[in-house]
Image 1 (cartoon, rainbow, N blue to C red):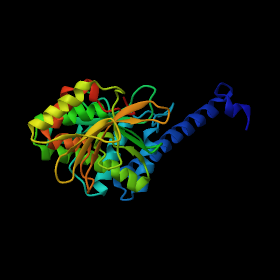
Image 2: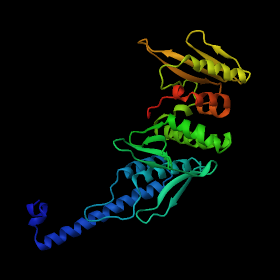
Image 3: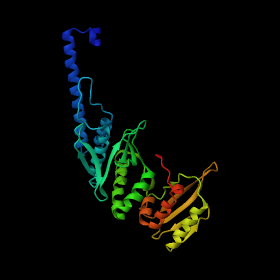
Image 4: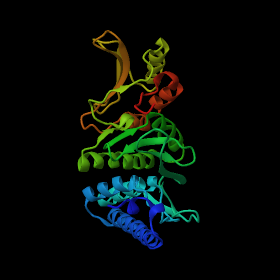
Length: 313
């Protein structure tokens, strides 16, 4: 290749015109490659193709030096379309994808959950120096979960589960409506695991018997257990001490066991955990608080000590 083709200043007039035309063609071809990926994102019925298109589009830069596209979606929108399409592929349409006209860019995208409150809008946003995107409630910017398609990882945020799901939403709707809306997030996480082998930390939404909800606070005051004893007694239940460790458990009926105890590490240090045991593994800690109001009140009244830890905390 000659120096003339490498250095624009050395080109002849005709050469500069040819180079300009080639740059336009390359920019237009780049846009065509985008449309192929975008069509794949919006039309494919194959989960693997859906993930591939979403991952590619998240980092895709449409504009070139010679071709600029004034109307385009944000990278975060591709994550939102991916989420909606994956739910659609699994015939789950409880989340409604909306668009709002925006003269500065392509339409702004967001989701709502009509069973809870149409004014609650959700979308993805990026955070500085952090990979992937964060699914947030648009008004408060509370992070429900983080999602990284490239790393195949998803983490639920315990703070938002507490503030939004357990506190705010429970005051707006009945327990079933809240459970149904939250179940959509759980199902989305399960689809990521089943379809693509994602690593998903469901945190307080994990209903498996093996799940240990580790408290962010490594030390609890003696009053915490006393308050739990009083709360259970007021509801005609009996809090029982555990034999082998420091802690207690509560039989909630139907073979549902709620436990709070201190787990000792190999180095002698310890941390407090909550566990939920039930034969069919239907009850997560979130569901326990959703179904048993006295436990939810005890938890929220003592949240400064009982907050569940999170990888996002």
